[in-house]
Amino acid sequence: MDPTPTWSPGDVVTASQMNTCIRDNPAFLLGGQQIVQKRWRNSGNYTTSATAWTKVDSVNLTLSVISTFASGRLFCTAQFWTSIIELDGGVTAPYFVFYDLLIDNTTYLSTGTSSSGFGCATLSRDAAYTPTATTFMNFSGCFTGLSADVHTVDLVWKCGNANTRGTIFGNASVPVSLMIAEF
Image (tube, rainbow, N blue to C red):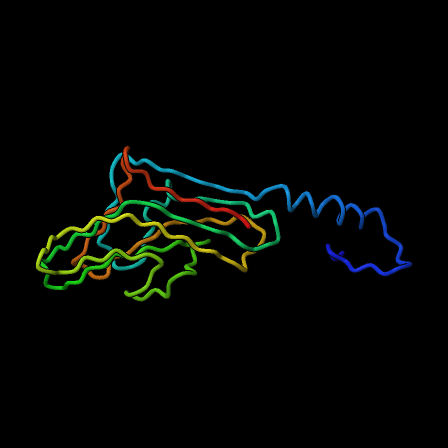
């Protein structure tokens, strides 16, 4: 049955239709959506020099949400401190570390090229050159067209070239935060 029917004078309205339109629709609208959040404090930091998309931590930085509504929409956000280090004395500058979110092992935000990703940390050479840059990353994305099912979200990253090392701080004082909300 259409959850929002158009009734005309003389239509016979059934108890089931009344339950759907008068009870179930407001319950859905006022019931709130599922939100899953994780703040992870690792015993150490995460590092990578990988140039292909790699999960940061496939055990502790993976969230699952059961999409119970037929909206097919998830809002995801990631927050963390990160640093980028050059490993070759500035020969291949600038240096990049890219960040993305996987939904069910599929990337929706990036095209997979070296210049893509939803978030990017950059280290360039200048007069006040230092071989390390630290920054706070905070990015969010809305994903649509998903089925009403269990969905898994992973934080992934990669370096722009092999002479770059990225670090995500996940220690006791600086947690990594991931959040998913269905809307």
